[in-house]
Amino acid sequence: MINSLDFVKVTESAAIAASRWLGRGERNIADGAAVERMRERLGEMAISGRIVIGEGERDEAPMLYIGEQLGRGGYEVDIAVDPIEGTNLVANGLPNSIAVLAVADRGALLHAPDSYMQKLAVGPKAATVIDLDVSVKENLDAVARAMDKRIEDLCVIILDRPRHAELIKEVRASGARIRLISDGDVDACIATALPNTGIHVAMGIGGAPEGVLAAVAIKCLGGNFLGRLMPRSDEEAARAKAMGFGDLKRVLTLDDLVAGDALFCATGITDGDLVKGVRIVDGYAQTHSILVQSAGVVRFVDATHRLPA
Ligand code: VTB
Image 1: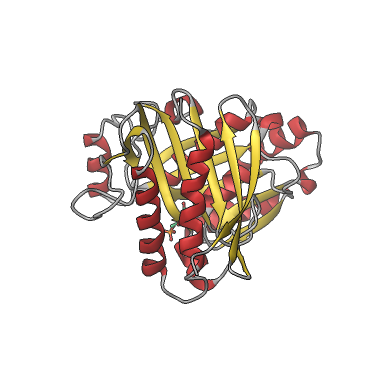
Image 2 (image 1 turned 60 degrees about the horizontal axis):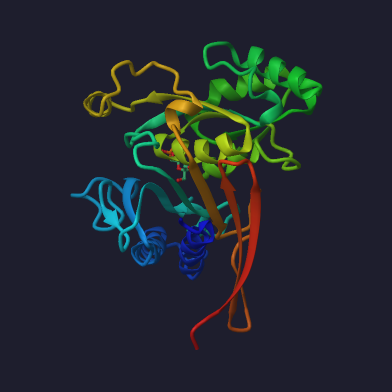
């Protein structure tokens, strides 16, 4: 039996390593530090882990590459990681960067290609009413009704990108409010499924691997997430097809993205909607993490780590 807290220790370590690079303009060095710590900690665990979502293909990523086997042996699990979700956020000292990990039974996580994904995420109350094939307005009307809110009281979170100009226009025309973010849609999507974040819907196109990570947490929390692959080029489309995605236009449901028992945990690097960031105080690092499991329990884990002198 794996102790889920052991996975929290993995994201804690990655977040502490990343936090050393806060605002120093070095996204790649920060990422490298977090990757190294995460890999080291996973390697110490009594699991037979296999990375299914990681830093890239084997030839481009020396650590935490897709297919890498980690652990001392034990329960067979598939692992999805994003040692720093929001490297630019860390490099610029901006909110909402997290160290992220999802673990599931072997074969349970969708092997998402390194491509874009159209996403639509909501919390439990609106879980059954969303549809990726209807208009923005229809979705927001349905969500407002399901949440017993006026559409003007909904807050939709969207990555601030030129590709979302039309989407932003449509959301504004519906009357709903918007929070634009520069990066980090894993945090944004999950925030829709937690109470009291003030975020009700996440919409738009972001990374496909990030979609799977968010889906793990949202499934456990009882919300809903729908995705559709959006290859950026013919080459990406061909790669997705080669990975078994026959119909690229197909809507991916939560069950497609996460097919079995799973666990999600994230530790804040900078302060965010889910958790606070790492604080370094008098030789100690304080961390704040979220741990979500299939049973529908959310745990917030605070820890104080004595740092080596
Ligand atoms: C997306 C989003 C991530 O980077 O991958 C984004 O899912 C990159 O998008 O959360 P662009 O290609 O438009 O820059 C993040 O925001 C951070 O990794």
